[in-house]
Amino acid sequence: MPTKPHFFASHHFERMAHRRDQDAWLERRRNSGKSWFLPVAASKNLVFEGPPPAAALLTLEQVDMLSCPHVYLGEYKARSCFALLTEPDHDPGWPGTGYQQVLQLATIIDTAEASLLAYARAMSIWHRNHRHCGRCGADTVSTQAGHVLVCSDPDCGWQQFPRVDPAIIVLVSDGERCLLGRQASWDAGRYSTIAGFVEPGESLEDAVIREVYEESGIVAHSPVYHSSQPWPFPSSLMLGFQASAASSEIHLRDGELEDADWFTPDDLASGTRIKLAPSVSISRRLVDDWYYQRTGTKLEATDAPPKAW
Ligand SMILES: [Zn+2]
Image (cartoon, rainbow, N blue to C red; front, side):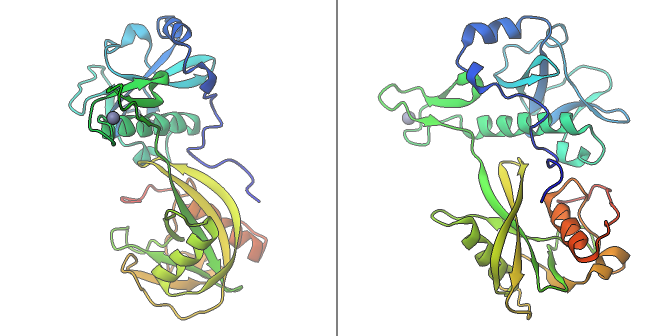
């Protein structure tokens, strides 16, 4: 069903995972003068502020930070890319650059660069949050080009891998209307599809039915997989579904939503009742595809970045 890859998906570059244990190759690439370095300070990426903004893809001559921990991201435009993990107070010292949240640039930055920045950001946060072994508390050591953190105590040796948290996101329909909800922190009038994290021991399909009932009181059935979107803010993988409703009366059961309601295709198109998420989000793709299935026409894109996602 999806017609194109989602925003933040990494199809623009090659991860080259088989190179991560090849230290000599990585060293040559780091020092080749052709590689690109992407500084990340905790959750913020270094960007040329523009306009328009662009990823700061720095060369070896431009960075004085090779003592920073770094992570090999892969090959992009025939260049090796490394995330440089700097500290939150790092001053890049380059005119026209600054550290920014890539999610706030999502609607105005190049798609491929956004994927690289989001990937680098996710690795930076994971490194910051796993400086110690979760089993014995000793320091961890970065291995596999930054993709495995190993306990420094040889008697322990616990390995930690980059974390990904699966979350379902679902468009529920009763045939004529779709179910959307809003959180209190969102921009006024903005509604989105139902979403929530998958729990241990739970299938994606069971998570869909549980989350819809918890958040809206609606009984959903027959979930059908749609597509997935990496959402590394900090570490989610959104797994999109469509599902049918077996009930219609809404009860906000768990307090996560401020409101939830049913919306017709006309409600979506007119924009008078609600605002939808930008087209970079899987939520919007689910709504767009449902609208197209119902009407045979496309919804107009609205791409202003929201204040809070
Ligand atoms: Zn340990």
